[in-house]
Length: 227
Ligand code: CA
Image (cartoon, rainbow, N blue to C red; front, side, top):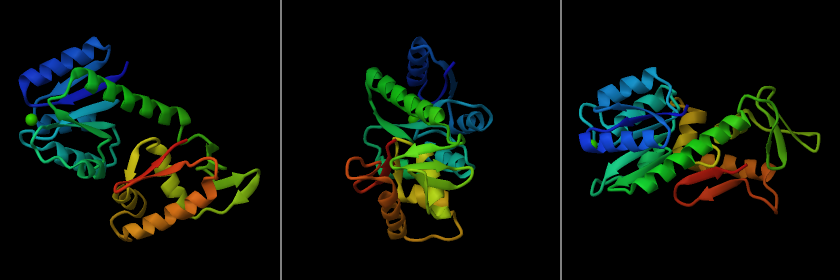
């Protein structure tokens, strides 16, 4: 059964979300402040977390920052109140998968939930650890770190494999330059976002063809891998 967590401090909103999500057939857990929410995310395994931004004790942004730093990758949809200056790029850079502004229609929220769950399922089905994933012109094996095109070996650097691996994990989702810098280069060495663009450029030359683009630019934000 698909298991969701709702972290929300307004009792009526929390109860409404839980009821409606349960009605849709999801197993739903809840937390009414940031501290409880964080504890649940760290101990349970949720398929998706609906995370309010303005929460008592620990904010939604801080929870997001904390769990992503620890490598916890549950999909997260941020909930933000109208009027709060919610920066889409900031949320995405912190590792949110989507966000929705209150007041939202239930239908819209349920649709977003379905989209995210479908994406996650797609990524699981592709199986990042399984051998031989077709990415555009290449067949990539992340275990042996080999890439081939029509049975000929194509040279990819270690960083290129790392970038691809991260993008496959986030297939069909926007990946910001900062996401890539954090995931591939880490804290020790921070190249500029220009470096990321150069790597993407080289990868595109190996992956994309005239007929099909698999690494798509999302203007002002980053990139998206489409398989
Ligand atoms: Ca709130």
